[in-house]
View 1 (spheres, one colour):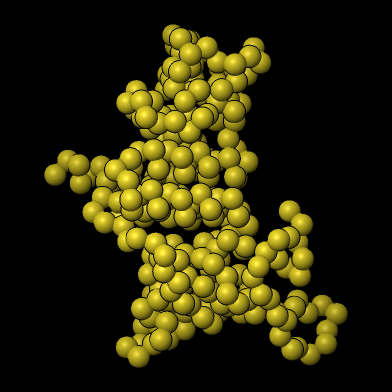
View 2 (cartoon, rainbow, N blue to C red):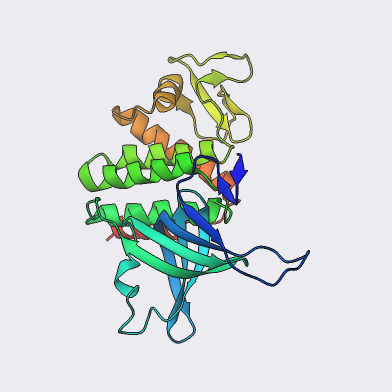
Length: 264
């Protein structure tokens, strides 16, 4: 990706260098203004501050220190809500930047009931699979689309599977599900396959321990079509397997909570 003054090419965000004493080894410090983003997670820092993780359109995941926002009179306190579009500003050159502005820009419906848990699931995936300051503008747009689907549609499964696939694709680890990698031919809709996380789809064998998926399901997933109940079921099993591999076995807390709730 082409970078210009620290920004991806085509970015609309405003960046302005701060004044600093001249030094050949000094890393320039920047102020970022009006950057679209969402809060993914926050945790207390000191007595009055927070460390927040945000997902931004031009900078990817960014760690910020929100100084003093836990004080009752903080102007930023009410703006830092999850699943709401913000315009953010920050400054700094270290891994953790300092938040300087956060303004709610509106335009999205709130998540309700189970959709809230699904939203936190998406956030946890971003936190665990994205490195900080690795821009993915396409994935940012997919995140906005996923939140919109969760807020406005009953098709939660489709929203989750579409985002999961987009996340693997944008991070460069998703294979073309529609191609049989052993024969380099399109998968047969009437045959069964397994998906190797590092290679892609191949014909299933009797001794395979990987989830078996029909070629019809793989073709539907490649099109982003989750209208069929079988595709929904097999797609869920397949994505759980692929994500577990790329998470190196690290469990997802939101998934555990959802499973516990269903057992109540």
